[in-house]
Image (cartoon, rainbow, N blue to C red):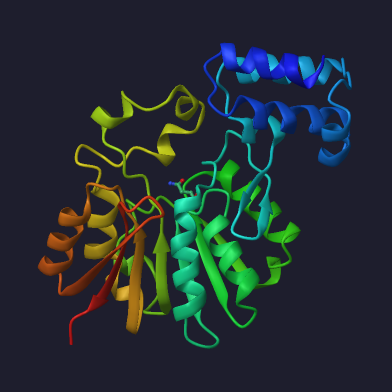
Length: 275
Ligand code: GLN
């Protein structure tokens, strides 16, 4: 199959970026470099794996799962349906952490999934250490593998924990300079309207209760004692959740700064203790 034919099939399946995706599928399964594939548009590949991959993509399985690869920040991640596919907007949290973590910091990544937030931060802050939490054993296995592949395995510790069941006394004592999290924050109503690709990702990574705020509420009320004196929470949020976060912060003695994503929508909340 030639690249143009793959592109035509993807286009017919309603895939927006059909040319780029056809190129990536073709190069991945033919072993041809993108430069060579560009120079030889008529190149043909009929590897059964390529044909199977096209069929999966036509069924709207995300390309990242088919290639088992996602780039986040400067790092390459292996991704499977056991974890959420890292999103570019989440890089905001990593940028903030790299800039703001104190020297020799210990930070937490709640709901780590592929491990992307903690691992990319560690990759650019060789003085820092992290503890990453997730409820899913399969996601944690991937995160461990990604930590190893990105050279930070000796500075990260993984916990298999149901964070919503965990209350402050479960943890030992205040120790994190920052708690970062991109928790599930989609409401059941929003879930009904998402693109078909998202239904291939684990629902547990998206659904954040009736108002989408369940995880933030729990972290702010139950886990604040884990922060050092000047420690802060850094959350990714849904674009309609800024007011909800401001209120939660106010009720619990925190200031709340909201920052926008690359599309100009509210996407990050930074909570610091008042006083
Ligand atoms: N922390 C991971 C990410 O940002 C997973 C988040 C999640 O599963 N909700 O991609």
